[in-house]
Image 1 (cartoon, rainbow, N blue to C red):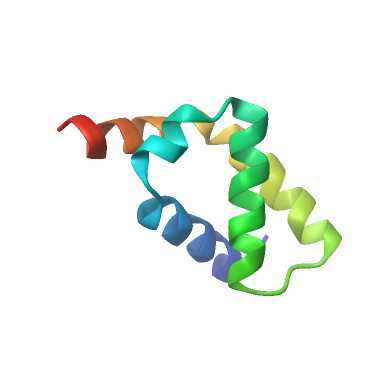
Image 2: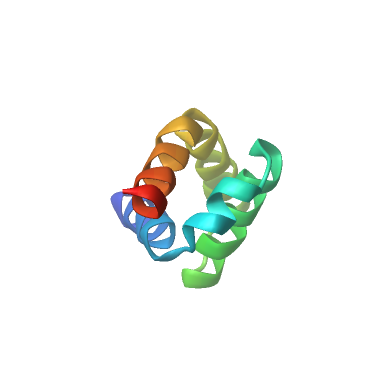
Length: 72
């Protein structure tokens, strides 16, 4: 996964409503974040799969960030 794709993903996370990030179950959150990142730029299937795996490994961090923004 390229640094550009990673920046796109984290930009999506930071600009998304905390409520959305916290309400979705893990699988739906991964799918939603991949879709939102795809909307930011073109990704091939391999990059989308890598992005999905990366998001899965960072789910707890994403939820913590959303929680902190919403309640602190």
